[in-house]
Image (tube, rainbow, N blue to C red; front, side, top):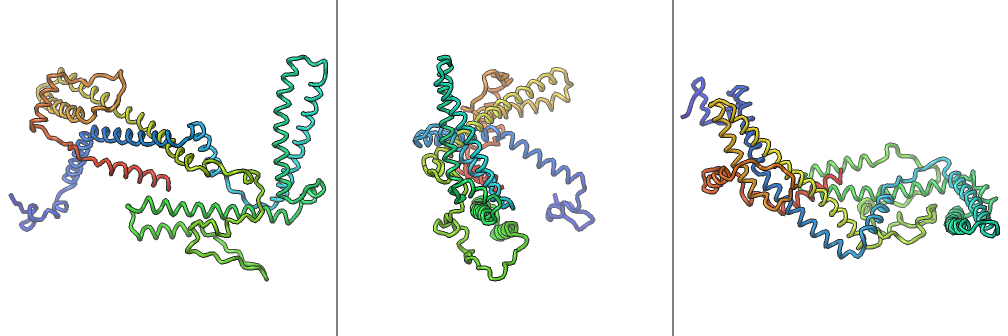
Length: 422
């Protein structure tokens, strides 16, 4: 029936004014009612949510196992290439230093000393092997050590040759002369600057990709522009250095195509500033082979599916343990309580039975541990609750089409992309 306050406010006809005339405790009651309903609703849907997650995990794991079987590489190779990719993509970018050239020359001098030490070791082992007084089993040990020393010596000679070629000097006097060379210092700093620019181009390109993927469905166009402007401001240097007199201006950078990462761009040209022995060999498999690339993705997805599967099993076990404990506590209190309290406890018991019937249908096929405590309800209670549930006297809070599997998969992928972009 419509009611009035002070003769002019009708709560039933003007519901938006209800919150203004209601008191603090009425507001708290409304909030508590909504929170309790949300908790009960999510509790009834927990079984169906768990079932959907298990089905999604199984489908994803089956798919990645097929990719692993057809990629053509073993798991050991994929793990090794993944570690190599991590080391290559997470190593720090070289920085400019005042004594960069001096450090490069000192590195060659250290390599020379190591080369002399290995040569002495090889000669000493040869003398021990030739010596007639050496025991037979010691000779076998020295031969193995000699093979290892020769292998190390060959690798070291290759490193020294590459370092000397990069510096452009082949004699001891020329190397020592370059120890305080200003040209060499500028050259090494130019290399560090070039690598830093290339890494910045890579990072900004991938930042924009993650931004477009993770915020396409969540952010408006204005928010994307604001976020992009903030990212560009953070990447700009704080102080712009002025060019000296008669300096040659650099080639103009086209901002429209800066992040296209065109392989024909001049920034990617090898101008013989390199001082890294790893660049002379063939490219690694994680960068060269599409099979390794797909296999690494499938391997990581497989490991993530196994991890999620274990977490779902833990969740399934927790459901049964919680229900068993709640049922046990309700029965213990029913045996020792008064009639008034027993009424409320019987209502709670009926709610637990209805929850068990809802979960029973949803978690069929969900794996669990063997040594779990029993659920608790007897067969008679379960049959009675099933009758109420299927005849419609109970409240069916779970529908079979409540969860969209495609939406769940898309939401998970969107969440992963968002976490990767952070």
